Image (tube, rainbow, N blue to C red; front, side):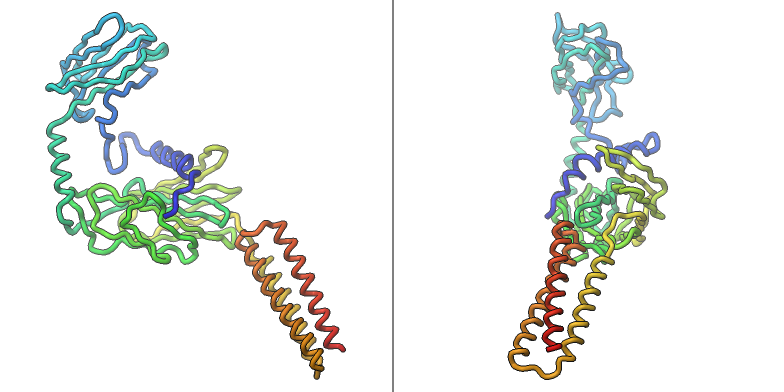
Length: 411
């Protein structure tokens, strides 16, 4: 498998996801309506600017932030002596007037479970918020049931491409690199087997296609067909595929048919020069800058299974094919002239015939070398200066060969 380039991982996708999150309407949370695991945030101090200096608030909840514990005793250990405060109707216990620089720790005991925060220092600018999250027995019971159901036999069902699915376009040495990142979501509590396979046909112009590292082993790429085999476990299955398209003109359109419904269309494209982007599926897009590079980011509504996504670019950097075509035409013209010249020679002696054959072999070798260097130039796999020097050398050698052939024919 191929690893996703560091430029994508380190900067551009972070920018992209941040822009998508910022564009969400108020009240929208994480993908699929999921909330972060409150237990992972338990005990982590968070400096804030909306609290007075020397103030610490501790919120005690059971299972999630939606379930605050009222009248719960909270201790703040550290400083001259421990301080005890009861939580209010929102589950908050507030400790005010603490001396900046004092190291403290919040502690609470809920149904026999001792909850402790990390030790932290009271800041000299703003206050500190801390959450203590107690275990929810019902949530633990449901999690155990979910683990059991996840091992059950697969049931007929459907999957969709989740909100974190996205399409990323970035220019590289070989052309336009396309990254299709699919979050395949099964919202059921048991594994499901869709009625038909999840399969993609990549564009005809796609080259160097590969499944990226970190993708599910259920993804298989054969030629230009990507297949993701079921069944699909509850939750998400990540599939990332990349390929390259070599633009031959300034206009480029990429189409991708979807085998399953897509919750939303999210796109990020590296912008080069005066490049423009358009798509019937993208409701709005804008330019954003990160690390000195401009990106086009956009988002659109849900797309049904079987529909085709269309991404169109204009003003795309490309390598024109006319230099290669012109060089080949010139070489063919010289070849034709040489053949015509040798055809006039008439009968030749055995020595002349041997010389003619040697010149023909040299001509064929030089012509093949010229065709190869032109192909390397078209693929941008040869340094431009090296290409020009090599091309001049080969054309000059061909001219000498044909001059010798004409001289032999005249003799």
